[in-house]
Amino acid sequence: MTQHLLLTAALAALAVTSSGCSLFRKSQKPRESTAISSEVEATFRQRWMDKRLAELKAQGVADAAAQTQAAQEFDARYQFDRKLAR
Image (cartoon, rainbow, N blue to C red; front, side, top):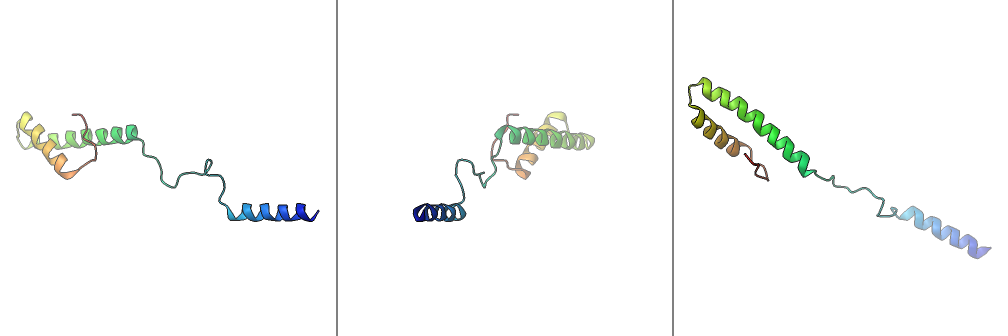
């Protein structure tokens, strides 16, 4: 009986001091989905480029020159870790 009581107390103390099984514990750092982040970056780039191209064309800049200038401005202003396919 005493051994059973000591074993129960030891298990209870272990349960209180441990943080649980690591297999079921959630990670502290959220996982980044590269598919989602790439899609967001591509969408942001496209919307920014469309707006900037319209501004440059309204100023009288030729299409090809406006495209080049807008791309250079975007790359200088927003530096993503991954280069997106253009």
